[in-house]
Image 1 (cartoon, helix red, strand yellow):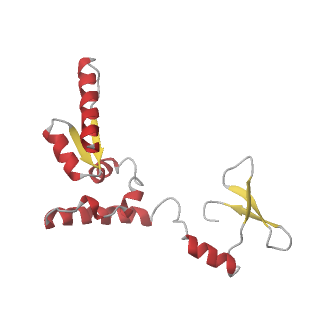
Image 2 (cartoon, helix red, strand yellow; image 1 turned 90 degrees about the vertical axis):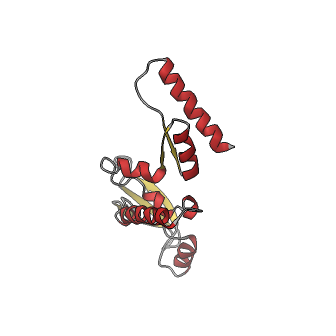
Image 3 (tube, one colour; image 1 turned 90 degrees about the horizontal axis):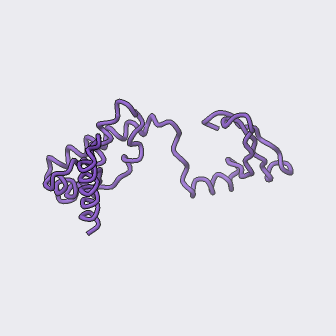
Length: 155
């Protein structure tokens, strides 16, 4: 029902563009292969999210970082050829994740364990007004509230 409604909205926008003689096209982007197939049958321009990311990767190299974590829901019920194609796409996306702009966050359990073992310290972050890359953290567990200066993206 939801996919049908999304296709109806895309068709409505397409009709509006035609009636206004406006430039541009409507593109339906979906993570559901069946929805894409039905949209194409209905005369809409449609792509899966993986196809869309592949198409813009030249202009946006980090596009699709989050797609690597998508589950197998797009390949459910497909034959082996389609599964292999999607696995190749996921491998490409996973390579982008390895070179992502920011490193991945630690898991909550690792953070709590690190704080207990005094590998990490918890405190209040205060950013400097002139730059977004420098600041200070007041750590109350360090000698009565010692201030730790931080700078850059990796600290």
